[in-house]
Amino acid sequence: MAGPKDLDPSSSPRALLGAELRHAREKAGSSQEEPGQRLFVSGSFVGQLESGTRRMQPDVARMLDEVLSTGGFFKRNCKAAARSKYLEDFEEAAEAEAQATAIRQYAPLLIPGLLQTPAYAWAVNRAYDPTAPEETIEEWTEGRMARTRLLDHPTRPLLWTVLDEAALRREPGGRAVMTDTLRHIAGLARRNRVIVQVLPLSAGAHAAMGGALKLMEFADAPPLVYFEGVRIGRLEDDPATVAQLRFTFDLLVASALSQEKSLALIEALAQDDTHEEHL
Image: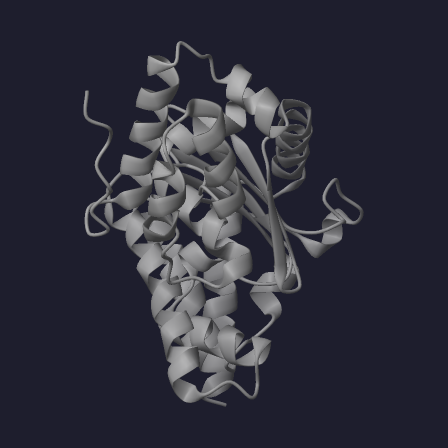
């Protein structure tokens, strides 16, 4: 019987690579846990590779070829599946985000990428690297704006964001940029496309004082949580960790303003900005 053909890089290579992994594993009569044990990863991690939720790294591809006796297929095709337009520390999370059916996140210091406007994204990217060439900033900004097209679908994914009031009062790019961003968020909320709640400064200490978090759910793979810091990010699939962070998000929702009061505050801040611009 002929072996699997090399993947066409133009046709969803990560999804095809995952499908080939599932085919090879089932052909070998193996569960997801069995190759996972050989690779020192969880069975759910193997499932995420198969669904295309997680990216197959070269070292994992090489070991899969050994475990499943696939003659170097995964190693050869790993490069095609690894192509990305995102910064290295975020690329896997961005690609998982594109597969998610539901995204819940807390943003303490800035408006999250899916809710940003081009001018806001440009200002944040420039702040990340003040000496980067203009074309690099434009490329990063275009990549971030490409992510926002996930919201073009009328219902999927569910996006539920808790924004810290501090993020609403910080002004990357200046007052006009922030005003447009606040109006954009309010518009998405009024169209019932996103759920947005504001965690007010008056809430005091809360469950996520340590920083941002993003929880992602999938139709055919276990949930993930993404932790993000300064120029670094990490995906975690440990069920206990995911469950704990889901509880953290629930506590944030309980401490946040209602959707109606949150929308009123966002629109009031946008109106205040407009008023001050004309003084």
